[in-house]
Length: 87
Image 1: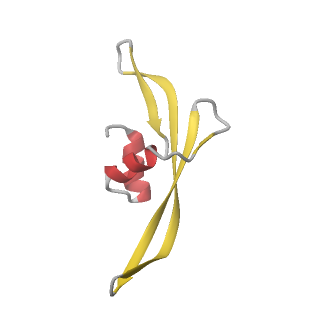
Image 2: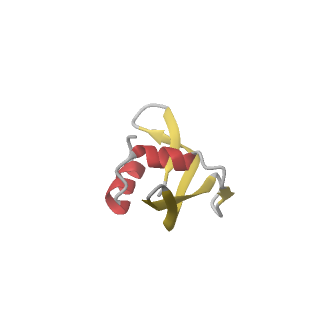
């Protein structure tokens, strides 16, 4: 959860629950980006209203998580990690 990707998700997109990002990162809806080793993961968030035992979707929003699997140097030593969430 450490890094600028998570900070951007929290501050720019107002998503405070890491579990949402974790859920989206496991989406089977994955397509390659124009940038090598970068993928777009898509999921849908629903707002549901229930009335007397009957529930229906009243709003649906498409969510997109861009993930980069490029190995990036970290710190001063020969340590590398995946770039991770872009947005």
